[in-house]
Length: 377
Ligand SMILES: Nc1ncnc2c1ncn2[C@@H]1O[C@H](COP(=O)(O)OP(=O)(O)O)[C@@H](O)[C@H]1O
Ligand SMILES: [Mg+2]
Image (cartoon, rainbow, N blue to C red; front, side, top):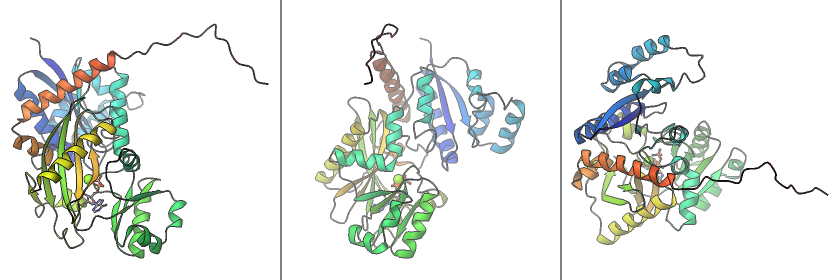
C-alpha cells in the first residue's frame, strides 16, 4: 500500500511559536512511528512566510531560526503575491494537512480556510469551529445558549467599558475579576483585577489586543482541570488532568504567561485529577457537549475551573492543543493507553473521514440567466 503523504505545519506568528516546535516534534515522531505516512514539514516563520521543507526541517530540529529565515527571505521573490505560501509547491502532492500551529493563524481558522480553498483534507476542527472557539466572547455566548456552565461575564468595547466603574463591577461580579481580550490566548491580554487601579490598567492592556474585551467573574481558589476530546460525530473523552500554580488556592496565583511558559517548575500536575465520580462525569459530559456546540472535530482540549464547592465551569476550548512533553493533552492519552502513534493515526483518519463526509454535501444551485426579478414601487 502506498503511504499517504502528510504535510505537517508548525510555527506561526503567535507567542506560542516555540511551543509549536516542541509539539510538532512529538507529532512528527508519532506520525513516522505509525509506518503508514510520509511526512513533509513546513515551518511558518514569525513573519508569516512558509519556509521550504529543507529549511523547515532544520527549524524543527531547533537550529537557530533567524539565520535560516533570513537566507530563505533573500532567496525568494517577496513581491510575488503568493510569496508567503509559495513554499507549499516544494513538497510534492499532499493527501492531508496536519496543522500544529497554536494561537493566531492556526487556532483562529485562518489555516483551515487555506486548506478549504485548496480542497484538501486536514486534521482538526473546521474553520468555523476554530473561529468561534478562538473568540472568548462567542465561545461563552454559545456555551451559555446551550446551558453549559461558564463564569458570569460581560463583553465590552472601548465605549461601553466606560459604563463600568469599579464599584459597579464589584456589585455585578464580586471583588475579583478577570479582564480578557476576546481574541487572544496564552494568557496574553489577560489580567486579574482586585481594585479600581488594577481594573483600569487591565482594560488598557486588553484593548491593545482586541476591540472586544470580557470582564469575567473570578472563580476563587479554583482547581484547573483539562480534558482531551478526539473524534468527529462520536467523540472520545480522555481522563481528566489537573494543574495548580503557586498561590492559586488562597492567594493571587493564576496560570499566567510566566507560569505557562517562562517557568512552570512550580506548577503541579495530577493525572488523573482526584475528583468524585459525580464531578468526573459532569466534566466529561460538559466537555463533550461543548465539543458539539462549538462545531469541533478531530481534536480539542477543554479546560475547566472547579470552584471551592466542586462546581465545574467550562473555562475555554483549545482547538489545537499543545503536544509537548509537558502537555496534559499528550499525557492524558498516554495515561489512557493510547500511544502517540495510535493517536495521530486516529486524528489523520478523522481528518479524511470529515473531508469525505463533506464531499457528500450538495453545493448545487440553480444557474441564473433567465431569472425573474421583483419590482420596486
Ligand atoms: N474566571 C476565572 N476565574 C479564575 N481564574 C481564571 C478565570 N479566567 C481565567 N483564569 C485564569 O487565567 C488563565 C488563562 O485564562 P484563559 O481563559 O484560559 O485564557 P487563555 O486563552 O489565555 O489560556 C486560566 O488558566 C486561569 O488560571
Ligand atoms: Mg487557557
